[in-house]
Length: 372
Image 1: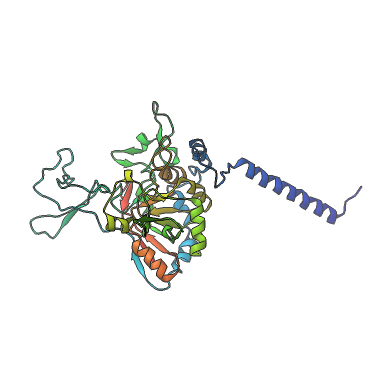
Image 2: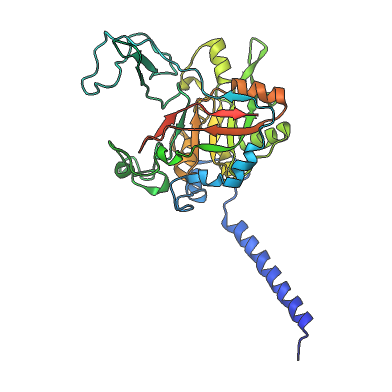
């Protein structure tokens, strides 16, 4: 029996369609799916360590910054319409330097800790002192990781224990052994110097205070910030996309506003043990699927308590930095950005940041800029 060319072509297309359908079904079956309303467990999070791992995805040390292409930068530049620039660093939480205090012998170049009481969210205040005798030069001294200073976490900063308490196995992004990669000389790989060309892309602000019922209520009065310990979930991010008329795309930086600095100004500083409003770990699939390059927050990104003390106190840090290769901006001051976004009635803008390219550095204090 002889087939016509038309029949043969039709048969081939049919077989290809069936093969494609099987492939799609296989992809759906093979990829673990977590229902949005299903409670997360530590077992699921441990599956996610593999499911959302980007360790071998790129052949360089940029991680998810690879999603920011030349085309992405050009598109982001077109977002500048009004020429309004907004700095995103909080004014430095510093203390006056007392030159009479003795220096620590082991660290003679580091300023001595002050004797004045420290704020609970700033255990490492910024020091600035003028060099005598002319006072025309000065010195900056800061240990910027923590909850006091606006900074970027590099990909070698945060590690996860893939072993046990008895036999720990801490690894960085890329699966590198921490004790080998992170030494007194700096990080051998994935240091902040890899971002020497800066970050130029589209930024998206998620203003969580726009969500109904999320603001803190004090004495019956709703405040312009979230209550401590408030979880901002994947569902919330998707709801905010609709409220703000924006959709997160590949290469974006997403910034979460909770009103941290407004609350601090009104009620005073607090420690993380009192609670932090921030990302809940169920946002991890959202970040992975949307190919987000960087995430940021007006505190340390993770909600506290995080809900998984036996897994990790900062699970969002774990998945973003260590698993997906997504750098983190901590402690940004998003107050003016939130106000500008409301005034301009748009929540996307040109985002730029230029970390100091310290070779092997675990991050950098910095002042990102949002331009409308």
